[in-house]
Every structure is written in C-alpha cells, then in structure tokens.
Amino acid sequence: MSRASGAPLARGSHTVPALCLAIFTVLWIALGIRPRYREDWVLENLQTFVAVPVAVLSYRRFRFSNQAYIQATIFLVLHTIGSHYTYSEVPLGAWVQSVFGLARNHYDRVVHFCFGLLMLRPVRELAIRRPETLGGVARFYLSFAAVAFWSVFYEITESIVAAIADPAAGIAYLGTQGDVWDAQKDMGIACLGGLLAAAFDAWQLRMQR
Image (cartoon, rainbow, N blue to C red):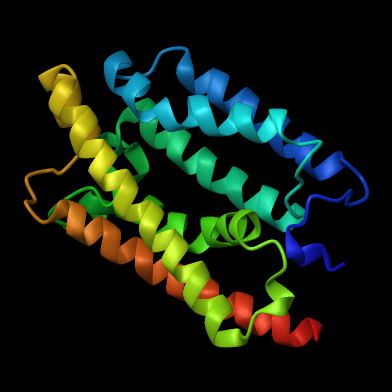
C-alpha cells in the first residue's frame, strides 16, 4: 500500500512522528509559560488540548504519513506562536505591517492560508483511507471540501466561544482588528491554500503513478 494512502498500517521508523511531537511539545511549553494574555491563550489552545492527545493516543491504530506529520507540526507551531502573543499582536506581523504600511497585522491571514496549505494532507489521509481508488476529480474535490468544512467549523466555533467567554478575552481571541468581514476573509484565504495543496496533491499522486 502506498505511504500516501493514510492507512492505519506501520510505516517504518517512528523517528519523524516522535521528533515532530518533541519539537512541538518543547515550543508549546516554552510559549505557554508567560503568554501575553492567559485567557486568550487558553481559548486559542482548546483545539490543541483535544487534537494532539487524540493523535498521540490513536497512533498505534492509525499513522499518518511522515509528510502529514511534518506539515501538521509546522501549522501547530505557527498557531502556538499566535496563541502566545494573540494573532493581532505577533511581532513579526507587526513588523511587516510597519515596513509595508499595511492597515492591519496579517499574521492571522498567513496562518489561515497555511491551514489550507498544510492541513489538507493530514485531513485527507484521515478521511480518505484509500485515495488511489478515487478518480482525480473526486480526490481533489473531497480533499478541498474537507479543508473548507473545517475552516468554516473553526470560524463558527470561534464566534460561539467568544460569545460565551470573558468579553475581553473573546475580543482578543477573534482578532478581527476592526474588520467586519474578517471571518469571511479568513475562510476565503484558507480555501485558497487548500486549493493549492489539493492541486499539488493531485500532481504528486500522478507522479507516483
């Protein structure tokens, strides 16, 4: 079976998954010691508190490809940096905003784009166990639709959590920076990243064949 299939079979060395977990854990602990706003940090990490333990506990039953582990780790690191500072106050984004005279800190936009670009493969491997049995159009569509769904789900969940949480923490958590179309733009740019990732995924499968 192809290593790209995402099937729950052993895939050789455990080095890459273990290294990814170690790197993420060290950075997550370091950035969680003194976050800028503790309440916002907790809200931002609600998904992490669930997703990472589930991935670890289910490892023996289901292994992602090494590529999927690496991409998911990169995304989680970007998200962890955003949760430490809050997305609207990440220093790198503020520096880019100042240098180019931008109206807002776009670090959150970059992370939403990276969600689509980096998480399409892990989501696809989890949802489609035998992608080689699908036609190219079906594979492309289902992979992209899954990423679009999770982007929409996140925005809806984010707004619900912000509505019931402490108002100040909720505002920081949403990070709209005064843009009433912030959620729609976040979903749109995540879908753009997903489209690029799905196109690359289709090309990669064709090359493997």
